[in-house]
Image 1 (cartoon, rainbow, N blue to C red):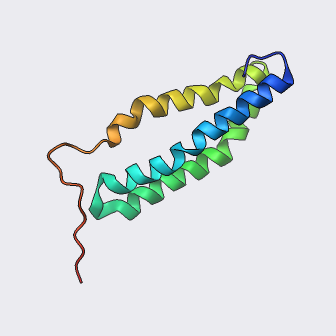
Image 2 (image 1 turned 90 degrees about the vertical axis):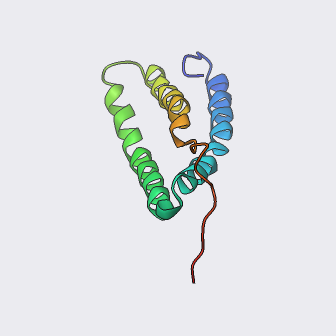
Length: 106
């Protein structure tokens, strides 16, 4: 999609890209909350904060990169970020010996 010479193919590709990512965001929040039950709120707020930082900084970084290369090539940065997130997702997998339950105290 980033290298497509046709605008309609690129728009369709980005729409499909967004649909694919829309299912990942809730999974990221869930994984952050289940990583450590004692610090679930802190972990979820960190993920949300990083999301906001990326949402605000992303257009500025892409705009800066357009001074170095073509706009459609800078969109490859988004694909690189997604690939990095996919590779790093295993970090959030809970250890097999750690229970995934939360104790409620009153």
